[in-house]
Image (tube, rainbow over all chains, first blue to last red; front, side, top):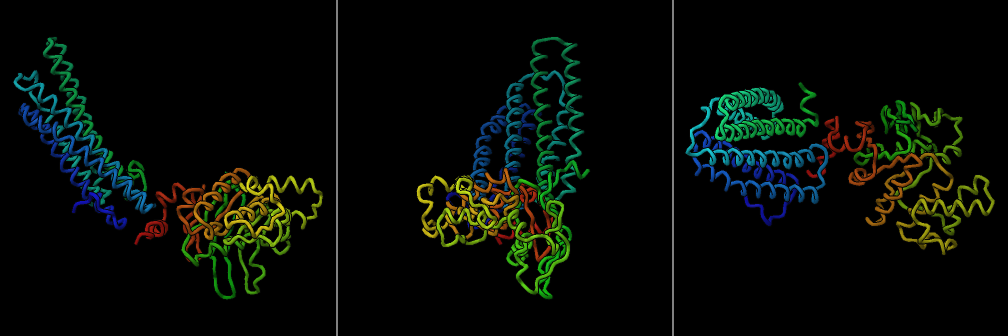
Amino acid sequence: METDNLRLSNYEHGLDTLKMKLNEMFSLSLEAFEKSSKSLETLDAKMAESVISGDDEIDNLKRKIEEIVYEILLRFHPLASDLRRVIMVMKIASELERVADQAVNIAQVAQFLEGKTLIKPLVDIPKMVQIAKEMLRGAMQSYFEEDVELAKKIWLMDDEVDTLDRKVADDLEEIVVKRCSKETISQAERLIIVSRAIERVADHSTNVCEETTYMILGKELYTLL
Amino acid sequence: MDVELKIENLSVYFGQKQILDSISFEIPTKSITAIIGPSGCGKSTFLRTINRMNDRFDDFHSKGSIIFDGKDVLSADYPVEELRRKIGMVFQKPNPFPKSIYENVVFGLKIHGVKERSVLDEVVKSSLEAASLYEQVKDKLSMNAYKLSGGQQQRLCIARALAVKPEILLLDEPTSAIDPLAAKQIEEVLEQISKEITILIVTHNIQQAARIADYIAFFYMGKLVEFGKAEKLLNAPDEKLTDDYLTGMYG
């Protein structure tokens, strides 16, 4: 269904259009995150480049979603749960756009590291990627299926990622202290950026869980735990 | 939150028919409370019960109380004239008297025995100013009020109600019979005067409630479903019935 230049006929039509665009944005953001982590693991600069060049499409989708949200607000003045549904699409679109930005950060590190011998094999970072991907998928599933229990479950997974993020930072700090070379510091600095980027993807996923819960119940997620 | 009116277990009947069913809530002072709900939910009856407009119907009777200044306004010994001075009312259609603008504004004061010209002049000026009408009519106060536009007539009615210095102003869909620009002017007047007096407004226009109300009460089939701060009730109401009403408008 093409929505450009198509006047929204009613609120439901508008919301369906938004959900469709959000789903498209979710697929692209998840793909960007998957590809960026893959490009880091394989040190594939070409794959990393495709993540960076694909970011514009995601940004454009976010802008399109905002346009539709403004149109719905102007035409239909939604209230209560209808209003929350529209506003939360816009907020979740922002989370996804930032996930894609983090994918770009990871891809840029992959480009930098291509052809280099890593100061440390990637062990914890792939683990973090796995959890963050599961969180992002679960958070968006909770949104599309309006499943508060799933949102709560995913939200609680964030601690695992935070713990691994701290461990990566500690390990790299130790390596830098032991081998105080320019190359070591340079790589460590970038791997910390990667770890932090994955941690942020997990944070955006928890935000989606919170936004989904508020959309469904009108209550903050933390009050339900 | 200071309370201006305390509604306690209020039920209202016309003959055998129950119009309001055990309504209880507290209306905060110097704020705008909007009463919303579908047609026939009892919101206008509620408003009219507060200043005893229903007394003239033989089959009207009520239970419960409306406490104002520590007294129950529904008790038989509460002086209705005094009540209506303290609690003014503006109706859906502008209803100026077939008199001059000046005479319309001072009508209530004269009934209460105020005759001194300088006092009346001052009240006319301040009341018309409060209703954002003074600048438009100051040079034609002797003109018949019927010559004013619909929106101006409604603002004159607000000025007339304000002239007797009420503590509460009740408004029953005050903008439904006038154009959107005139309605906007009245909304601005209400927001301004709510700094000094308590306003209770019945409206079918949810967007109007969203624009001006500090608090909203949602009535459905004679019952109060939910009362709360406007932002909360319009965004995340506690009751499913409220949500259904607010979202059902697009069905």
